[in-house]
Length: 130
Image 1 (cartoon, rainbow, N blue to C red):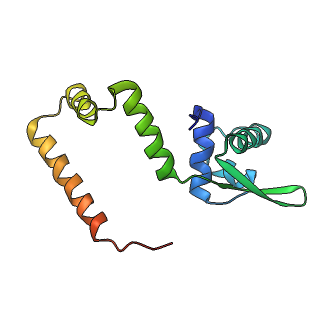
Image 2: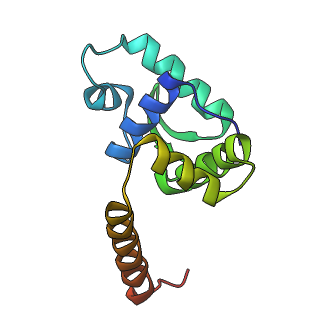
């Protein structure tokens, strides 16, 4: 999977936020100062070429929508990041962040409890068969 540039990621975040939208609606979700219409239009077309976005045409107007969910991108990005910087080791990643953020054992245990709670909630949610 191709990585997104910072500008592409900002546009994708805006598109994920609106779900489906015209360039004008995407721009509304971007932080100030707002980029030019042509800039966002160009980035959306690049995202389309990369396979992240598609569109439905209404005459000369296009409605854009993501082809990959935010969660899918996050998972693929994090897996790539983990492999590139931590040799695929989740333990090395956690150890790095614990050391860099000076997290003590009590704080780490609290984070583990939150993760366990989230996992239990995920397990208890009914799955939707496709």
